[in-house]
Length: 108
Image (tube, rainbow, N blue to C red; front, side, top):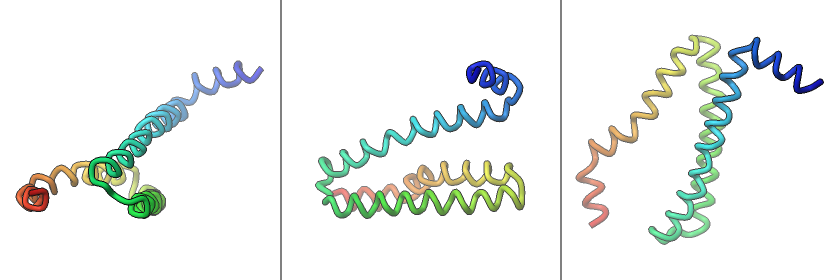
């Protein structure tokens, strides 16, 4: 009975299917965080308290940005949220290119 209802919902509601796919992709992409922690501890000799602090900061900023982007989506439309997301995704690469010399000096 449940499988039949589920099949009907998945066939009729394409937005719900997209939502489910997005949730799966996001869950899989979050798996990388554990490897970042391992890399930070072993490669940079970062202490556990620092890792805990940055993990907490990451989770709080993730929650805060979700609430902010939800408000922006409701007020100005989802296209603005997509534009902000694209900019924020591109921003770290831009910063690395702009501050490459400073990063090199810090490393050496």
